[in-house]
Length: 266
Image 1: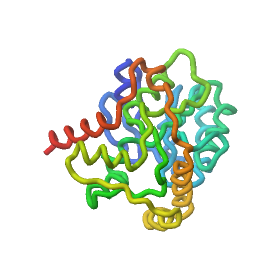
Image 2: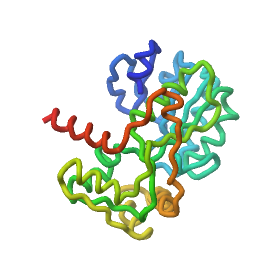
Image 3: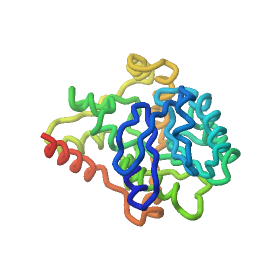
Image 4: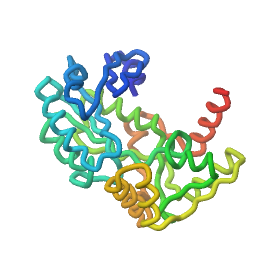
């Protein structure tokens, strides 16, 4: 996303725990849980893009004090990355979503569907696909309009820079809703390696997730799978095309691109 902002001539401060270099941006160290890092991240900033702390069942506890500090420091527009599965007032980041309009006159909440990169990056699905040729979920045959992270970034750039602030939440999806079984079929066709979707029970998924994260957060994620199974994510929006002027990337095209990049990196 920083590249999209700098391409439009905006000065960007990229804040992360490792202060990793980002082309065209000023890298600074930032940790939600270390208030000593907050002042430098906010210096001269009038807009912020917020990515909640990972694996936290209560991100509002650290995010809301930061946002109050941001407002006092002169930030006038805040764009929050949330999830299509979590409405304002819902669990976890839903509490931050609910508070945002009361903190800033200009705001937006991005509520993207599940990322296509979950199947091709370093997510647990991508790892189980590479290592075992399997996708493990409790989502049954529920469908999700998976979205490419690049399309989310393009919407975020618009939300941050448009002359008129969105002042609403934006549900961001890909062009077609797919079940995990259909995802596995596309992966098999494009990669030439058999991939299957193995259905877990809610309890089995909770136990599996709890091996790598707090059980409280594992339960939150398992609840989202259960909602998918019930049809909560079976929807497609026009957000990407309406705000960026181009259609969102299809899942097959995403996998083909990821495979080409992997081959080029060898």
